[in-house]
Length: 390
Image (cartoon, rainbow, N blue to C red):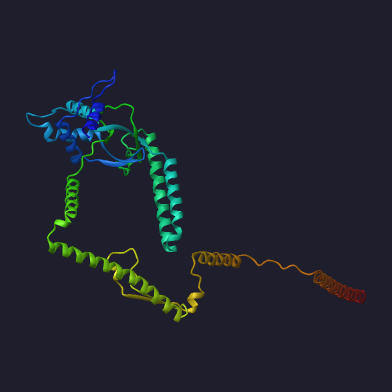
């Protein structure tokens, strides 16, 4: 083991012919890094498909200048330039590295929304119809929000806003400020690894192990040692552990027996009631619930009538019935289709129409002759009157 450690140290300390020797970080740098991890606000995001935490450079400098490291006679830095140089040295010692912010485009947002929709389609058959409607509505609202945010980001980017927030547009609209929306960004590796005072993002490499991890590890180690020393335990403790193990095994056997008994009771009741009564003892015993909730309620019974059996219970049958109802509604709205007639009936209709036309013509001729006769009588009467006068 010692030889392997020495070989590793030699590899770490080795530098190539054109490379410069990198100094090891000092204790003060570790203290500063630990203080920064605890006091400087950091954000979480994805970097090359890894979950990482990052901080903003100008906020880190502001916080360090107000900290104990910039005060007193033994201050590590007193001015802003000295703090930037110190953080640049910490960057060389691999406490963090620089990353560039890349705004997420509208196509990427739509692609992620499409993938989320595909994932939602795979889980449709697991939920009820109501739950499916709620989830699909929620996804649509989220997609609409993402689209609006992305459009706002694009407009903000064209205006030249580099801080990642969309500020107020026109200044002459009564001094009203529009709501600021955060831009969706992702991080990528920056080619220039230097510390810059600004809104630059720096991803943490230094990740100290928390104190409670050490405590938990120590407890586990002591527990393993105590279990290995079981033969050296006092007889009273060994007897107590034996009884506890027997009780735990008995409890497991009782649970398994209950599952078998409840299944037998269900089948018997179901057969005697011809499938109308569903009776379960401890219905939550095999469900994914808490320990105490699995033993409550004690029983559950559901009586299914014949009418309920005739109703479609499957989701596909429900969807089919809904489609049929929609089709029937559409048929009611539309006009009824014409039924094709037989050729004999068509001839009868034609003959009937011809007879009706002849009747109309005869009636019209009779009315015309009566009118002419009345006109002739009137003319003869007027002639007789004129002769008498003469």
